[in-house]
Image (cartoon, rainbow, N blue to C red; front, side, top):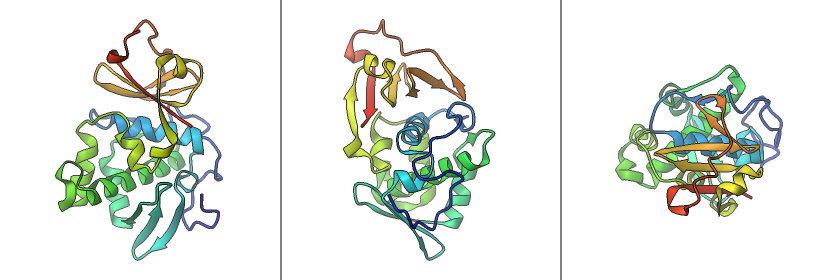
Length: 205
């Protein structure tokens, strides 16, 4: 967590979003794993990327980001602009959208750097690899939060643990015991699904 970061968020370090439900949300299919991880990270570590990452510093034409797991990712202002266009994020809070798109852009750049799904060729390929569906947990790792995630149960999330829940081909953030559903506060997790094979739950610690 870099107190002297050159990145400016509308929120102080560690300050949570005023409304995690409708001020930033997914509008396209495929990137739900990344969206749900970003929402959960904002509620655990605060909305500002400065609190989610270890360090953000000015770099040539952009920012150099050091994640909590030690990865160094450089993203340009142009890549940030393109990411904001391609993420498909919408919402009523410009500050929260800016921070969410920054986290998305850095995730896409790390996907490119790590050749995720053959994305080595371009930043565009990195974004596409986030938008075409993927397994739960992958987005937390690209945010640098691998050391902060644990396998969980639906009951853990229903009881208030912050995390993500994947079932029926979709991943949602679970905040205060409720699922986030495309910009709306949804129902509690479906606890009637008793079999672990029916879902994947992850909590942040």
